[in-house]
Image 1 (cartoon, rainbow, N blue to C red):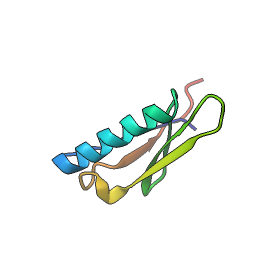
Image 2: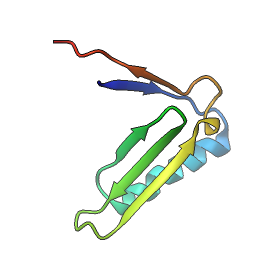
Image 3: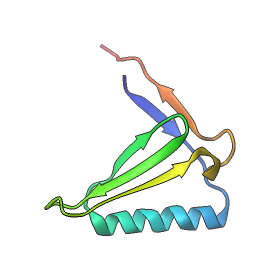
Length: 77
Protein backbone atom coordinates (compact mmCIF):
# COMPACT_ATOMS: atom_id res chain seq x y z
CA UNK A 1 0.00 0.00 0.00
CA UNK A 2 1.56 3.37 -1.00
CA UNK A 3 2.25 5.86 1.75
CA UNK A 4 2.89 9.56 2.07
CA UNK A 5 4.68 11.16 4.96
CA UNK A 6 5.13 14.65 6.23
CA UNK A 7 7.47 16.17 8.76
CA UNK A 8 8.78 19.58 9.77
CA UNK A 9 12.09 20.82 11.07
CA UNK A 10 12.12 24.21 12.78
CA UNK A 11 15.27 24.25 14.90
CA UNK A 12 18.24 25.66 13.00
CA UNK A 13 20.67 23.11 14.42
CA UNK A 14 18.40 20.23 13.39
CA UNK A 15 17.99 21.68 9.91
CA UNK A 16 21.76 21.99 9.60
CA UNK A 17 22.23 18.38 10.74
CA UNK A 18 19.60 17.15 8.26
CA UNK A 19 21.16 19.14 5.42
CA UNK A 20 24.65 17.87 6.29
CA UNK A 21 23.32 14.31 6.32
CA UNK A 22 21.85 14.70 2.84
CA UNK A 23 25.12 16.19 1.60
CA UNK A 24 27.10 13.29 3.10
CA UNK A 25 24.80 10.70 1.52
CA UNK A 26 25.14 12.49 -1.83
CA UNK A 27 28.89 11.86 -1.62
CA UNK A 28 28.28 8.14 -1.02
CA UNK A 29 25.88 7.46 -3.89
CA UNK A 30 23.71 9.04 -6.58
CA UNK A 31 20.43 7.59 -5.31
CA UNK A 32 18.77 8.06 -1.96
CA UNK A 33 16.53 5.44 -0.39
CA UNK A 34 13.98 6.74 2.13
CA UNK A 35 12.30 4.49 4.67
CA UNK A 36 9.69 5.75 7.10
CA UNK A 37 8.44 3.85 10.11
CA UNK A 38 6.11 5.06 12.84
CA UNK A 39 9.15 6.16 14.88
CA UNK A 40 11.99 6.90 12.45
CA UNK A 41 13.04 8.35 9.12
CA UNK A 42 15.90 6.34 7.61
CA UNK A 43 17.98 7.66 4.71
CA UNK A 44 20.32 5.29 2.87
CA UNK A 45 22.80 5.53 0.01
CA UNK A 46 24.83 2.91 -1.83
CA UNK A 47 27.50 3.72 -4.40
CA UNK A 48 27.36 2.27 -7.94
CA UNK A 49 30.01 -0.44 -7.50
CA UNK A 50 28.31 -1.41 -4.22
CA UNK A 51 31.48 -0.94 -2.18
CA UNK A 52 30.25 1.86 0.08
CA UNK A 53 26.99 2.13 2.03
CA UNK A 54 25.68 4.68 4.52
CA UNK A 55 22.52 4.82 6.58
CA UNK A 56 21.34 7.71 8.76
CA UNK A 57 18.39 7.42 11.12
CA UNK A 58 16.36 10.32 12.50
CA UNK A 59 14.12 9.58 15.45
CA UNK A 60 10.65 11.10 15.63
CA UNK A 61 11.84 13.49 18.37
CA UNK A 62 14.23 15.16 15.87
CA UNK A 63 11.24 16.75 14.11
CA UNK A 64 8.60 19.23 15.26
CA UNK A 65 6.18 17.44 17.64
CA UNK A 66 3.10 16.11 15.87
CA UNK A 67 4.57 16.84 12.42
CA UNK A 68 5.94 13.33 11.88
CA UNK A 69 2.98 11.62 10.24
CA UNK A 70 2.67 8.61 7.99
CA UNK A 71 -0.37 8.44 5.70
CA UNK A 72 -1.29 5.17 4.03
CA UNK A 73 -3.18 5.40 0.75
CA UNK A 74 -5.51 2.87 -0.76
CA UNK A 75 -4.73 1.76 -4.32
CA UNK A 76 -6.69 3.70 -6.90
CA UNK A 77 -7.65 1.03 -9.47
